[in-house]
Length: 525
Image (cartoon, rainbow, N blue to C red):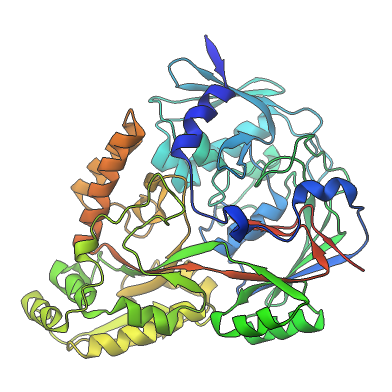
């Protein structure tokens, strides 16, 4: 088999894989994590305040942003994104790609330890990747009939039926992370997910006290890469002994906790508190891209099977007014389903159907739809103020066009795990979607998601994007797909938000890149 090295692939990959996130200054802390070589590990603690509790720590059992945040503390994958959004080796020492683009050979790093003390070997990788390809929406969206095989103790191959330039990006994706776990844990996992959280990262899982905190502690046998830290790749060091992921729902409590030193980093600071943050010389912050906030329609059953009624909602909403009420972060109104930082895929295509602010047209569409006054439920949560405020505004606006709307309010974990998957209970769902390496990996087009790609047009264009020989051609298909989805009102992207992640001056080396990074971070004692 003729092989070519990963360097060639990255030359292509760097062109097509510029994704949204905290690029440039907006995603970095006051010091580069590359400076961690001069810092000393201590027995200190780092407290991170999160406004939401994860539904699970198993990255393959939930697409919630908070799950990928906590899972990334524990687990690592074969490749990871560097700060240029190139997928580079992490648990793999190197990756070779065959000339036909169908076979990837992962040469594993030797001596890498799991948190249970066992060495990571090929059998663990094959078991983990086989589970990932079954459960990951990215794997199913990007890879055609992937087959993983053990060559020897430190070599694994992935063979595809069809080549795609998006393969390594899918493996590096932090959503549904391709986490490498011990074979016995993977193979004994029940349907609800793994029951032991054992990875290879610099911190290991210690305790989860529901509704209070998650506790991670330094893994003393962690084997770091001897390479500059970049994004999620390179050298990682646990410079504090313990990390506490504190569940602090109220934003004002997070801010006051920062001010008093109870918390070192806070994820849920809102725009209204930004002035206080900026006035305090002992506090700093970064504003990485968070997510596109979205109204998702239940098209499986109920009133919104009607295209006209979905379009009525789209015409009724003034998204500028909605965001002014709902957005607690920095925001932008855009039809783009991938954020502007994603310079390859971001597009204004379909803008003629977005944010039309036409109540009279909306009323006409309601009449055409045959809507009979039935109650329509908006599923939402108070855990994310953006979503709850959004739902309140939408309810008020839709009343103006004659729709009978009520709110269903649950904690976020329940909304995701129980109610969303019961289509008889809701009609609109307030949710958000982070960036993905490519449009085919957007969760709401995944077959495993609530509705996935419903129309033949969506399915056809997704296939063309995946197999396109050039990025330019793929971008044309993506613009067609985004336009179709906006006109057909698969969903409404209400606003793109940048989160405010604040930290005290005692914290050195903090960055947010796709997820909060706790490695290479120290706290002055």
